[in-house]
Amino acid sequence: MNELKRYLLGFYGDDFTGSTDAMEALDRYGLKTILFLRIPNKELLNRFRNVDCIGIAGTARAKGLDGMKEELLPIYEFLKTLNPYFVHYKVCSTFDSSPEVGSIGFASDLARNYFNGFTFPLLVAAPNLGRYTIFGNHFAVFNNEVYRLDMHPVMSKHPVTPMNEADLAKHLQEQTNQKVTKVTVRDLETKTAIELIEEEEKSSGITLFDAMNDTHIKKFSEMLWEKRSDQAQFLVGSSGIEYALGDMMKHKNKMDQMDRVVNPSKAEKLFAVSGSVSEVTKMQLDEAEKAGFHLVQIPCELYTDEVKAGQFLETIAQQIEEKKRVVIYTAKGADDPIILNTKKHLIENGVPKDQIGRYIGEMLGIWTKQVLDKVDIRRVIISGGDTSGFVTSNLDIYGLEVLDSIAPGAPLCLAYSESAKYDGLEIALKSGQLGGPAFFNKVFQSGSN
Image: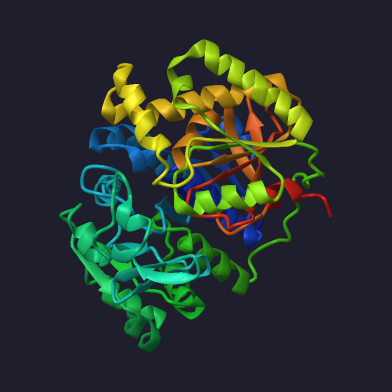
């Protein structure tokens, strides 16, 4: 893409695993991408000046409005100064959010102060990930079955932001005063990209686009390309946007052949940490155990007993040397009795109820570093968005690049760290919902062939 004088895309992911999802989508189309875990300075930008796209991973999805504002304003300022063709506020493809926590509407309102335009296009569908939007209603695959979002076995029961409304426009309208309009599958199939732009420009709010298949994604991408200008165009949505942009660049033959920085070599050992309680992760843990991984559940008393925690981590380090593939995990699924026991234990030990998730994440981040400091290991899996953030922070990781596309939305990455010990670490960060049943073993086997 040497003919482009600007970055194609600058994106912000509202959680860590969602950010790697976006990076992996771009990588699949040969778009060289670096994901930063903080706003890069000029020195870092110069170091990675040959990339096509730049991302920044964040945590807005888990924050209230004040926390979101504090995090997003400097991000928006940076992306405005970067001035790529497109700026993307990347959200989960299940759109979990609320007016109080991870508000996508509030994030869009803040963006109005930095990015001009008649309307902000919104695309949540990602057909290749099993995410579909039809006449504004969103659907997601779970265990090979397609569920409307408000009937989804996992997302309808989300512990913080349960999705009880499948109409995304209606759900988003509760989070913003901007008018939310829709472009339906009927519009996509009967109108040209130019006609869609003309219709869209009659609005001055947020326009939700349906998509059921690649044809709809292609029409969306054609519209984006026709609308490009000297000013960055602000977009909202899932990694469906990255797939749309990648497909667009592929068809317009504007990509050079991408050479990877390094290819994964065969792994002798693997350490995994799971803080996710989703049913998908439970299935992955069960499959890992069947494949010969050694699984150890974290006893709840360790969170408040430094001595016992230290002994536990020493044992884990020894088991990594002996058993080679070791997973420590908080729970198997949302119905695991240890969840209530852990909450009870932490509350009794003075941890505020609304801080329990953060407290556990912080401990997992600290413990991961302590284990890695004890063993010689180069490949790690972190399962859970919040857990991923705490782990990468403790390892002084400032950037990630795709090393191998293990599964859609959950790549194995090469880590860039301020610490020599962790610089070059191979790490897979995955959300609870992504990866496929055999994910853990696929990560371990990467580079074996």
